[in-house]
Amino acid sequence: MLEARQILKGATGHTTAKITIQHELIYHTLIKNFGEEQAKQYARANEAALEQIRKWVQEKRIECDFSNETAYLYTQEESSEYQLQLEQELKATQQLGIETFYTDQTDLPFDVKGAIGLENQAQFHPRKYLLHLVKELTEQGHFLFEKTRVLDLIGDGPYTVITDQGSLKAKKIVIASHFPIYDGRGLYFTRMYTERSYVIAAKVKESLPKGMYINIEQPTRSFRRLPTEKGELLLIGGNEHKTGYGGNTEKHYQNLMDYANGIYTVEEIPFQWSAQDCMTVDQVPYIGPLTSKTKDIYVATGFRKWGMTTGTAAGLILSDLILEKESPWGEVFLPSRWKPKAAIKEFLLQNAEVAQEFISGKITEKKKNPTCSHLGCQLIWNEAEGTWDCPCHGSRFEEEGEVIEGPAIERYKE
Ligand SMILES: Cc1cc2nc3c(=O)[nH]c(=O)nc-3n(C[C@H](O)[C@H](O)[C@H](O)COP(=O)(O)OP(=O)(O)OC[C@H]3O[C@@H](n4cnc5c(N)ncnc54)[C@H](O)[C@@H]3O)c2cc1C
Ligand code: FES
Image (cartoon, rainbow, N blue to C red; front, side, top):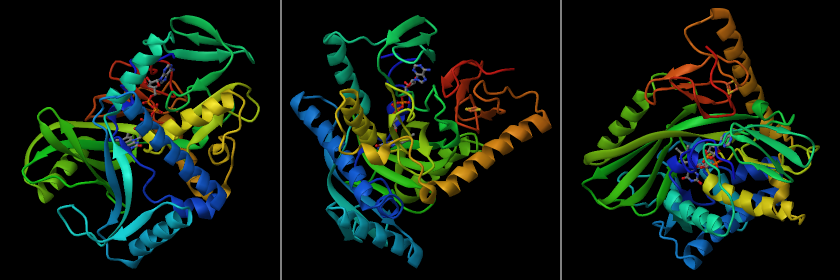
């Protein structure tokens, strides 16, 4: 395993870590755009991932604050539009054999106009869980190299992997670098974008709600409890925006704090952070061969902020493919798919925005801003995090130019 910086300091170290197959509104859209069979594959793959995590936590006795929880998808809106969306999602989940139930009673400190519940989901501390697995792997003789950035892949199998620390040979490669750092003519940068979200951890006076929650309207509001040595905190997440499009990013934290103060008596906010995840234009992750032509290179990306289960599902699917077995769920995630019904609107929008960023950067010649070393878009200063963020495909850089996250692999250009 080659890691550019330090393991588990990327999105996985800054997630909210709900382990659930309830991925906001998804199943109705999946049935409509991918068909019932592939929608079932999506559900079954995520169920298998949840069970895999649960099994390892139990069998390996991993201390990672794992707890079983009921997940809720709710709305506070009375309008028929939101009610219809919930109804359709409920129907779709039940059609796929997911044991959801409808309720308008939750543990949240405000009334909801409807919610879909799903029992036996979970939450955990992903770093505690994954550090345990990594320790086990290295003890078994596997190698992990941190501070080793992959720069390129050469050849057509076995491949030479060029890194900033030297090169090595590999027969099979999995690109799990969040946004793929090697494209292999898969044109990932035309069919993916990144979205940042904000999270605060609040100590509140009232008792905390049981279960994990996310709404279906805007702005997104996501809740779960967080056990800490100093007692339980409440995680509240939301305020997402496309990377580089957040305006004054500090206002997003303030907005979450104001919201928390409106629904609870907040005593302290000991932690806050933001992070981003990769979104695909048809809402389904890309898991499988990098392209239909590249041999022995696999990719796992586009988890749409549900990577605890879909990332684990990627492990299950890719290990089958690498061992030349058929995966029962591979088809729906196949990276070379093209589902125009599901993808075309978002595809056109994202690419129009990228073209706009590219052109406006060149025309206005805001020379003070550095440009991105990926495809040359003008970077935008992120005040809250003190980073340069790329509005095109989400690369981020330290103030001084070092890459924080890709697809860029080199310093920004001044
Ligand atoms: C705010 C937020 C809340 C979320 N909440 C949830 C949730 O409740 N439940 C859920 O299921 N999912 C959630 N997600 C999504 C989930 O966290 C992500 O899908 C998942 O963590 C992505 O994992 P990853 O391995 O793809 O990326 P990362 O964890 O970012 O790992 C990628 C790694 O690749 C390394 N890398 C990059 N480029 C190179 C290179 N050139 N060479 C070598 N290494 C490289 C990076 O340094 C990094 O360590 C959330 C995401 C966000 C942002
Ligand atoms: S990430 Fe593609 S141009 Fe910056």
